[in-house]
Figure 1 (tube, rainbow, N blue to C red):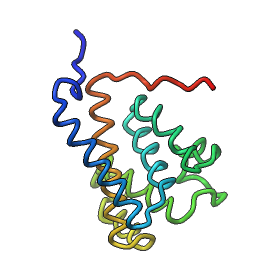
Figure 2 (figure 1 turned 120 degrees about the vertical axis):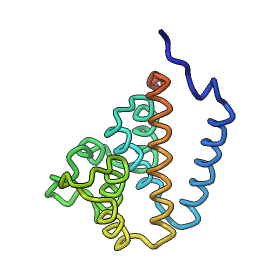
Figure 3 (figure 1 turned 30 degrees about the vertical axis):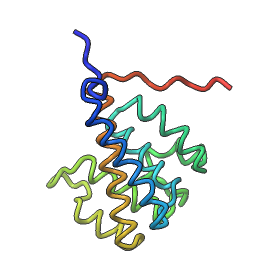
Figure 4 (figure 1 turned 180 degrees about the horizontal axis):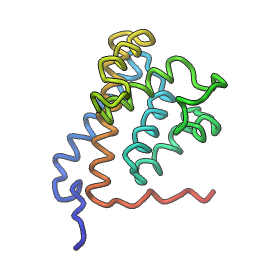
Length: 158
C-alpha cells in the first residue's frame, strides 16, 4: 500500500503550515534571531526525528546560512564537544530543540522547563518565542514528510 502524501491530499492544511513558516521567518528577522541558528536547529530536530527529506533541504540551507561543515559534522555529538565549537547561544538553542522534540520527563534528559530557563539566559523573550516556533514548525514538517514517505530532495550535482 502506498502512503498518501498528506500535503497533497489536504493542500489547504499544508498551505496554512507554509503560511506559518513564512510568518515565522519574518519574525526571526524582526527579533534578530540569526538564520544560521534557526537552520542549525532545523537540522538537529530533523536528525532526531530521522527525516531524510528535511535533512536534504536543511543541511544545504544551513551551509548557505553560514553554518560551517565541522559544526554540521559534529552536531549529533554537540553535548560532548569540549572544543567550544558550539557557542553558548547554539548550545541553549540545541538543548531547547531537543527538549521540545523529545519531551521525556523523568528520564534524566533536560526538561522543557530547564531548557527554556537556559535559553532565556541567551535570548530575550521575543527571540525565545521565535526559536520555539522554529522547533514546533520543523517538527511539523518532519511529521508530514515521514507520514507521507517523501523522498529526499534531489541533490544539486553542481
